[in-house]
Length: 51
Image (cartoon, rainbow, N blue to C red; front, top):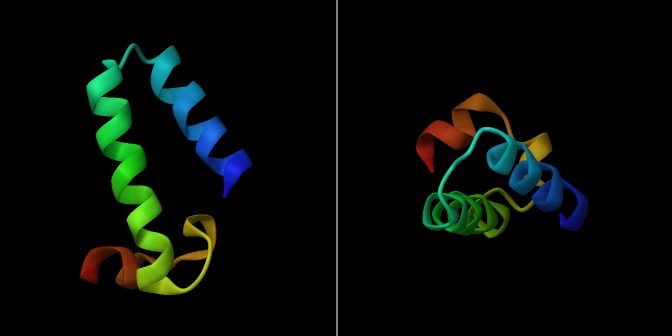
């Protein structure tokens, strides 16, 4: 997930998200991994909604 995490962080920085917002989003995306047992970029819409 390291590369995806960096891409997400860079995209949020480009959009001028605050550091706290970026930290919160990354925290929740990282929490998605154990819930779905797969990388977030392979999680389906229904899995994300139920999370």
